[in-house]
Every structure is written in structure tokens, then in C-alpha cells.
Image (cartoon, rainbow over the protein chains, first blue to last red):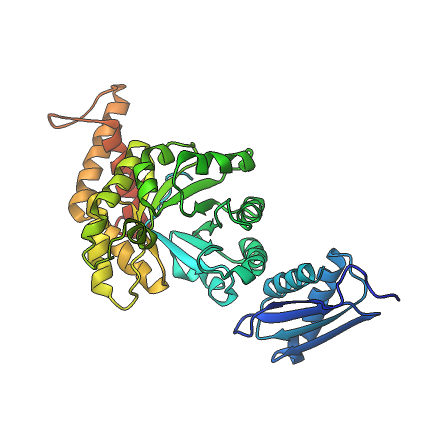
Length: 90
Length: 287
């Protein structure tokens, strides 16, 4: 797959390293790669990954590198931070 | 509802999700997700998106959903406004309103949506134009006072007793009441001074304010207690409503209590007192 030209090479970052929040990063990449760092990874990794994939799909992004540093953020907070990171990267 | 109970309007920083989770627990009458002063310019976009999701996903309980947008003459105001009206915000708080055109400019974006406006008046010019601001639109439901910026604007020092604010406070109340809407007093910024908060709230109530701004959840309960109707107020309200009911049953257009005529605003005030007493558990609901 080719690099998604919607995203700028320097990418976009959004969020804060605080309780109930997360930091979402997104960069142009030649395939889809999702990295999740979370204290609740053991229980919620799949759910967080699905949320990320949904937001990417809604924004028409098929390939990208996404890094999510989670600090107990609820689903809607992850969505908000990733949507903002995407906007900052485009 | 335009005249719903608004004793407390709690500010919550628009870029802070951890506080938003607890909105229903705080039991403020209105919550203001703040995109203006509480958010630094580099975070304005992030806060706007976070507030968009919060409006849709957070449990607000019985609390009214409010957003304070940035002024329309900033690079953020229009986007904030569009986000708020597209995501079920019930009342929009407008900072630094100085004249009626600040309201009519917003109206054009609202279409037929049921959303109320709450102008915050925080300058000398705004105070002098308060009557035209209060009547600029049917959507204006609440006139708010912002004392921090106001004292800076007039070159006065903000004091604990607030002598420098008296005329401005009374102007806000007069403008609001003559327009048939509610008035909300400024925030009390020392969260550790409970006595100061209670005294200032008593002062606001005595001047005719319907509520007060809140910067910390711990301020909500003391303010609600000050705004609770007294036993005498409740008794009198009951008598007024009984007299009103009796006049209605008789088909009489004139309501009298003893030898005293009761005007419509007195009946409306009595209804509000009974509703407030019921909400606060001071009175059992009666049919």
C-alpha cells in the first residue's frame, strides 16, 4: 500500500499525559500500524484498537502509524484526541 | 426551557476530560464547558473536539448543557458556535458582550434550533448597554455578570465586600428583570472562603439575582442553600396559588388574597418558589 497522502510527514499529536486522558499521535506510513501503551492494555487493548480503526475509517485513512498513550481515557476521549491529531496532521 | 432553575452555572475547562465524567454527580443547575478563558490558544482546536464528544457522550443528569464559546471576532468563535449548536448544547454563554449586535450576529447562525443564549457582561460599555442586550433576542434567557474583567475595565480594585460592583450588579438585575429573563451573578473566586461565598450569594439573592457562577463543585451546595426559599416564602406562595386556583374555578379574572389584589407576576413568582421548594425537597409534590 502507498503512503496516505492525506497526512503530512510530520504527523499530528493531541492530548495530555493526565488521568482519564490520552495522547494520540498519527503519522503518514506505508501500511497500518497501531501501537497502544496503556495500564489497562490487558483488558481493553482490543476495544481501544477498534475505536482507533473506527476513527481512521470515518476519516478515510487506510494507512498510517498510530501511537496511543492511554491513561485511563474513556472511548469518547480517545475518539476526540485521535480526531484532533488527524486534523492537525492534515 | 427558558426559565428553568439556574441557581448555579459551573465552569468546567473545555480540555479536561477527567472532570467532565462527574458532571451529573455535581448537581449544578447548569454546566458550562468552557472554550474561552480556560483554554490556551494552542489547545482551542483540541478542546472544541473534546467538548463535541462530551456533549454527546457524558451523562449530564438533570444539568443543563452549556458551552462558553470564544467571541465571534476571534479566529475560534465561529467554529465553537457551529460545534455547540450541532451537538445538542442547550445554552450558549457568550463572553464580553458589549451591545445588541453581539447577540444579533449570533442569531443568524442558529436557524430554528432551540438553544438559549446567556450573554456575559464584563465591561463598562456592556453594563451601560445591558437593557438592549437583554432584549436583543427572544433567545436571551440569562444575563450574567463577569466581575473580574469588569473591575479591570473600570480601573477599580476588586474588594471582598464588592462596593465597586454595586451599580453594575443592579444594572444587570434591572436589565434582566425588565426583559423578563434571569440574572446570574459573577463567580466567587476564593474556593477556600466559604463564609465569603455565602455572604456574597446572600447579597446577590437580595439584589434580585437568580443564581451565581461557580468555579468549583464544592461551591454548589452552599449556593443552592442560600437560594432555597424560606418557610415564610413557601407559606405565602401556597396561599397565592390557592387564591389563584379559587379565582380560576370561579372563572374570575381577578385574583385576591384577603383584601389584596394579586398580580400575574406575583402568581408566577409563587409558582417558581413552590417548584424550587419541591426540587430542593422542602415540600412534597402536590397535584
